[in-house]
Length: 144
Image 1 (spheres, rainbow, N blue to C red):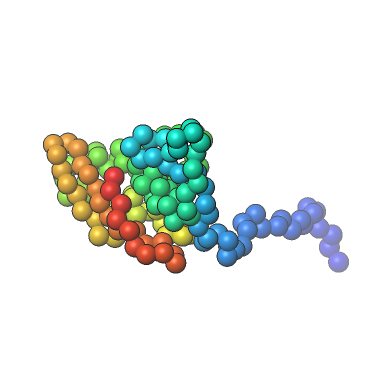
Image 2 (image 1 turned 90 degrees about the vertical axis):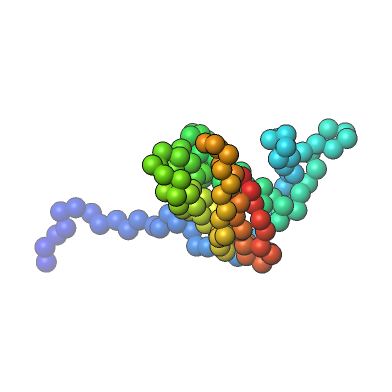
């Protein structure tokens, strides 16, 4: 019997199995979209938001975050908005924005689908509306 020249080592899998709690909506700090910061009550405390409200805030903030722009975020967070803006026509830009926002939101295991994109142009600026459906919650409209 020939001896092995190099040892054989089994390496455990680093990915963890998907658990049921991965799709639950967790309560957390409320977000104030107008201020762009955590919401505060009259005493200056941050109120707690429902899991559904936190999921909606995550969807809006993720679709507005430039992917790879912040070192604190993993590469799976954010949309490639700047690359989409470099397209040669409005139609191509809209398709690129739709693709990158859909991909950014589908990273979350709670997201069932993203669809019905609408674009409203004002010169070089664009306002994007779309519908998001999370698992076990009703569909909602997001605008960025």
